[in-house]
Length: 169
Image 1 (cartoon, one colour):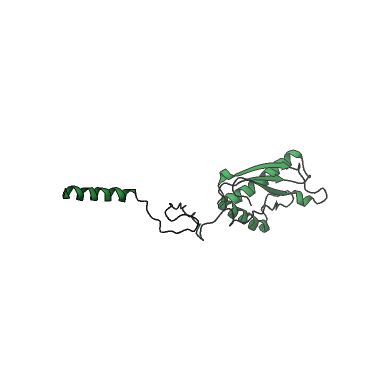
Image 2 (tube, one colour):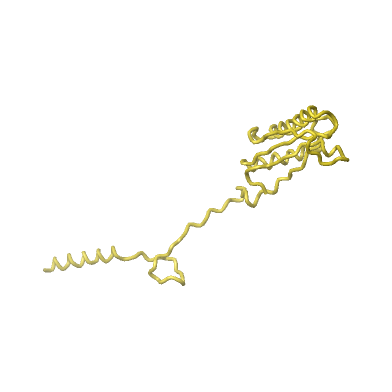
């Protein structure tokens, strides 16, 4: 009888151990002491070197690039503007840019459409040389069709930008 009793004590001990709930080492005031504590993994925080596109990127400034009369030469004062735009685009890999070329009313419609296209192409090529992927850049000429000013013709000789996609602040 003694071996049977010993075996029964061992079996009951094992069954009792298997039925016990693990005790959490985390104490909470709102839960009973034996209730399981639900924990969620803490969200991963970006490191200081990882840019957060929602907070770390500044808004992209879309200033027009102006040209001289009958010229497609990029003026030196606008190179910094384009360099900043290229930097912003490299930080926003989903962003695409449409570059539109414009002219003043001097010249024929056909000539102005071609001149506007050449101006947009000069800006596009400059951005490409600064590292912006060609597939993210498109050009369009409006020629003299969308003037900014009827009295200040130099404001109409420009290339403008329109952004789509990506993180556009």
